Amino acid sequence: MRPCEQPGAPPAGPATGGRALAVRIGCWLLPFAALGAALVHFYPDSYQQDGGFHFLFARWALAHPRFLLGVWARPLFTALYALPAQLGYPAAKLATVAVALATAWHTARLARAHGLERAELAVPLLFLEPSFLLVCSETMTEPLFALLLVVALRLHRAGRVAAGMWVASLLPLARPEGFFLCLLWGAFVALDRHGGGTLFRRALSTARLLGGVALWWLAALLMTHDPLFIVHNWPQGWSLDAGPATGSLAQYWRVRYLLLAGPAMLVLFGVGLVALWVRRRLGLAVASLGLLVALHSVFFRFGLFGSAGYARYLVCVAPPMALATLAGWNALAEALPGRLARRVGVAVGAAVLLRAAWLCLGYVDSYGSSRDARAVADTAAWFRAHPRPVARLVYSQAYMDVLLDVDLSERPVLGRDRERNVEILRALPPGTLVFWDALTGPQFHDVRPADLERAGYQRLYRKPYLLEPLLPFLHRPPLPEHRQEMYLYYKG
Image (cartoon, rainbow, N blue to C red; front, side, top):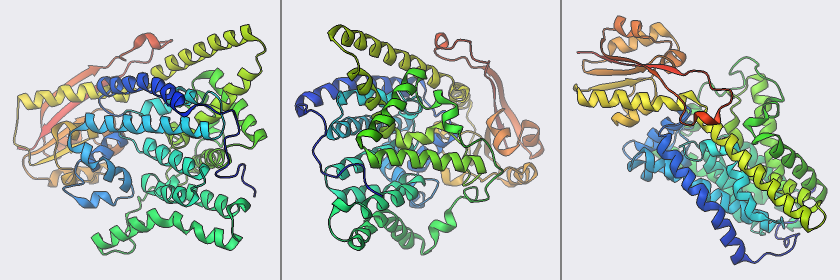
C-alpha cells in the first residue's frame, strides 16, 4: 500500500495568499452562520430523537458524571457540550453551529494545503450537503466527528503525523465509526515509506491511535471500578446479529439526494473523485470516505451493529465529500476555454449553488418529526398553566423532558414489550406525569392511551395537531399531511 501523497509536502497547486484566502473563507462563513442560527430558532428540536437525548446526557452530566462514560452518550460529545447545555437547548444547538463553522474553515484550509484552487468554495460545498445542513444546528454527534477528522487530516498533511494521530484517537469517543477509521489511519502511517524509520517503528508509532480509548477506559475504571465497563455498557442492539438483513449494498448511492444536492452536485463529486485519484491527492481523506460508506452499506445490508442506514452517518466524512466536489468543480472550470466561457461558468456555478441551497432547505423542512416540537411546546405550555406536582416524568419524545427539565436519571427505561411497559408504569409512584404522543410512543414502546389508563393514569390533556411545513413553497409536489396528537396523563 502506498500513500497518495507525502505528508508535509508543499501544496500541489498555485499559491494563494493566506490572508486573502482567510477573508474569502470568512465571507462564505458569515451567511451560513446566520443560516445556522435561523435553523436553531425555527427548528427548536431535532429531526430524530437522538439529538434531544444527546442534549439531555450533556445537560445532566455534571450532576451524574456516569453520563460522561456511556457508549451511546458519546463521551467526548457529552464532555464538550456539558457546559453549553447548562445554558439550555438553544445554546447547545448554537455550539453545534460553531462546530460546523469550524469544520468548514478547516476543510477550506485543507483544500488549500492540497493545492486545490478556489479553496473557499469548500465552505458552501460542505454546508450544501443536505445531511450536513440538516444536522449543523442540532445536537447530533456527527459534526463533532467531522471536525476531529478534518483537523487530524490537516495535521497529517502538515507533516505533524504524531499530532494527527493523537487527534484521530479521539474519534471513537465521538462515534463508533472512529474505531474503524483509527485502523485505517494506522495502516496509512505504518505503510508510508516516506514516514522515516523502519516498518516496525512506524507500526509502533501508531499506538498513539489508542490514546483516546485508553483515556476513556481509565476514566471508566476510576469511576466505576469495572475494567470492562465499555464492553458491559455497549448497547445490546449494536451487535453482529443485531437484526435481519435489510436494504442493499448500494443504499447510500441509490438515494442520491440524501447525499448531495441534486444531479449537478453528484456529477461534480464523481468527476472530483476521478481527478483526485489521477492526481494522487487526498489519499487518506478519500480512503476515509470510502471506508465509512462501505462499512455502513455492509452493516445496513446485513443488519449488523444496529445500523439504520441513515444518511446523516455520512456527515462524519462530510469534509472529504466537499473536497471531492471541489476537485470536480475545478476540473470542469479548467476545461472552459476563454474569458467568456469562464464568465458563463461563474453564472452556471452560482445557479448550481442556489439550486443546491433550495434543495437542502427543502430537505431540512421536509421532516414531519421536527414539526412535533410545536405541538410539544404547546402541550408543555398548557401544563405550566395548569400545574400538578411531578414526582416522576415519563415521556415519548426527548424534547418533552427538555422543556420540563426533569432529571434524566429518573426516567424509567421502557422497552418494546407492551405488557412489561404497562407493569413498569403501574409501579411508578403517585405524582407521575406521562407526556405522550400518538406516533413516537407507539412506535418505540407500543404504548397507547388505553394502556396508560390500564396502568392507572388519568388523562389531563389531549389535543390533535395538523403540523404544516414552515416553507411549503419549497415542496413540489406538496408533502403529505403530518398529523400528531399529544397527551398528558397523571397518577394522583
